[in-house]
Image 1 (cartoon, rainbow, N blue to C red):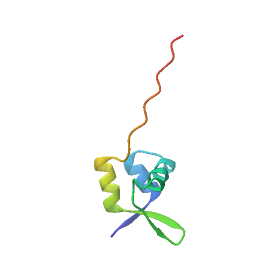
Image 2: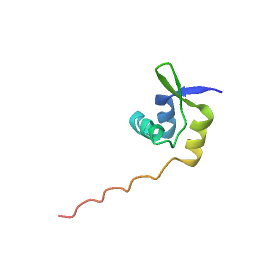
Image 3: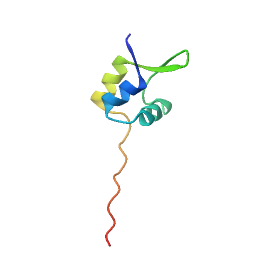
Image 4: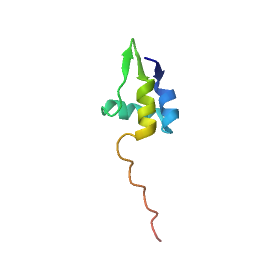
Length: 65
């Protein structure tokens, strides 16, 4: 099993490192902790890239003036 860092996973998914960590903390993405590092299996990175994880937030609408 190949493992990648959260930064690399986030870059693949097109999200911030913070968002990637939130997905992991919410249990939507599996990760492995080795020492003090949290790593994501390559298969999981590919799954999330293919299927997505969670629901996207609604975009804010511009206010009319």
